[in-house]
Image 1 (cartoon, rainbow, N blue to C red):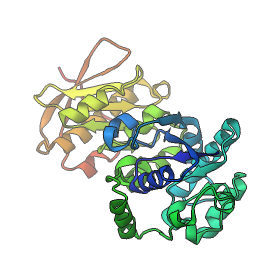
Image 2 (cartoon, rainbow, N blue to C red):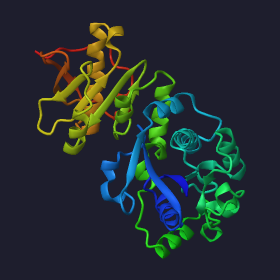
Image 3 (cartoon, rainbow, N blue to C red):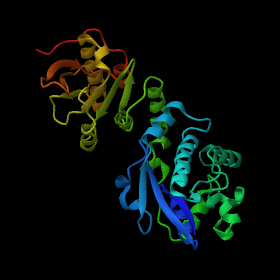
Image 4 (cartoon, rainbow, N blue to C red):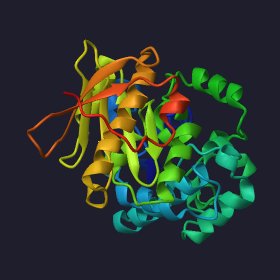
Length: 336
């Protein structure tokens, strides 16, 4: 009996591919979902993610994905580099688990990878002839599974990206429910997130905690190393609350429905005066986002998480967010 590892993401393509694989007689399947700092956790998409019949295993790829983001590959970023990470780990799992094939929902052209690039990727990772991409199988060279009769030719198709209509028709024919698409499932599908990530990677190697900060709508990086996250709504504030580290600065105003602000930096390189300037800069950004009238004087409360004492400053709201993002004034006025 042939044994195959199905790489499952919860996308419509991966759901259709899994349904096809489940219909192949004599093929033993192991279904796997990879966790990464850039993917939603399975629990976050709940029943929309899990495959029919359950049996979903998970593997964490935090270290591999951080390395991918920092160094990259010759493949298009992010989707091409992501596939390299996924298939490189899959190759190791095949060797360890004595599995025969990898089955994926990849489409030719998706993420900028055409037929020659997919073939070269398989060869580079020692998977030549062992990766089945049933949705695009007729566009690719035959695999060992087809040659050995482990995968029927009628279950190979000629779909290519971005032709999503034919995929949807096939999904309806197979009675496959909608998937969790990339825009919702993967942070790297968001160009704003990718721009922030690249800016950060040019200066440091971020932790998983810092990568989660990049997902907030109002994230700002002020050179040389100041990160400011402003949470306006209650739900967003509850999410931000879980990400504070002992070295972070917490900032809010003595007002109803105050924004919650997280400020992060290497404080060992910031003398006391610079720390006050950082608090003022973050406060001006928060006041601009909260819509305070220009010149409105507000009392700012801030403290480091490692301290019990809360300090206070009087900060005037800027005329605009653009003005707030300019270098902070060298003068900081302490509230009386």
